[in-house]
Image (tube, rainbow, N blue to C red; front, side):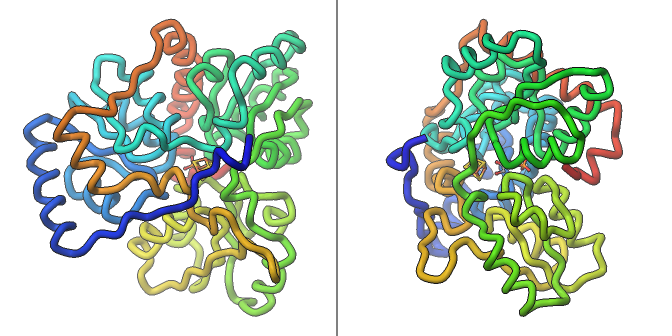
Length: 345
Ligand code: 13P
Ligand code: SF4
C-alpha cells in the first residue's frame, strides 16, 4: 500500500462535560433504537466503557463477529475498522450496521486489492485460499476460509493434516508465524499491518534487559524478530487473558496501545510497558496506535445514531460468497469452545 494512504493518528480531544453529555444522550438513543455497540479493544476507552455499560460488547475481531451474529439488536454500531463492519453486515443482512467512521480502514485490507488477489489465486488453482479477517468482503468472497489471529494456527494445522497446500493473505508476518508453527506449504501475500510492523526487535532486547522480570506479550502481526522474544504470541483476547493468568507483575506489550484500557481493568495492580516502535533517531508512523481505529469517537458515534448515517452495505453476491468463508471458521471454532477463552494464535 502507499504511504499516502496512511492517515496520521488523531485522537479527538473531549472534555468531561461533553463526554458525560454525549454518553447520556447515546445511552438513551441506543435504547430507543434497540441498538448495541460492538467495539474493538483498540478503540478509545470512552467507546469501550459505553459499549460495556449498555449491553454491547468489546472484544477481538473473531468474538465481535460472533456477538453480532448472536445479538437480538436491530442495529449494531461497529466501532472498529471497515472489515469489522462488513463482517457484521455479512453475518446479519437483516440488521442495520452503522459505523462512526466509514473511512476507518486497515493497512492489510488496503494492501490486498481483490482483483490482484484474485489473479494470484487463479494462478494456483490447486491451493486452498485462506485469508485473514482483516480483508475486504470481496477478498473473503474469493477465499475458502477466513481466519483470525486467534484461530489461524489451528485452521492451517487442520488443513495441513488433510494434505492441503495453502495460499495465505494478506499479513506476511502472521503468515510466516503460522507457517513455522505448522510446517504448511504456504504461498504468502506480502502485506503488513503498519502498526505492528513498527515494533523493533533490537530495541525490545534492550528493554527486556532493563526489565528482566517482565513477560513479553506479542500480537502475531509483529515482525519475526519481535515474535522470537515473546513469552506469549496471541490474539488481542489472548493477550488480555494472559495478564490475568500469568503470575508476572510486569508485561511488555507489542500491540496497539488501545488494549491497555482492558488490561488495566483486568489487572489494575500490574505494570504494562509499550514495546518500542522506533530505534534511536528513528521516528514512528503510528507509534503503536492504529490511525484508523483512532477515527472512532464519541462525537461521531452520537452523530450516526442521531442521523442513521454511515450505514454499511455489502453487495449481495459478494456477501453471499464471503459468508461461506466466514461461517466455515465460526463452525470450526464453535466445535472447540476452549479456543474461545484462550484465544491463542
Ligand atoms: P484481533 O483479532 O487479535 O483482535 O486482531 C485484529 C487486529 O486488527 C489486530 O491489529
Ligand atoms: Fe489493521 Fe493494523 Fe489497524 Fe489492526 S492495527 S486494524 S491490522 S492497521
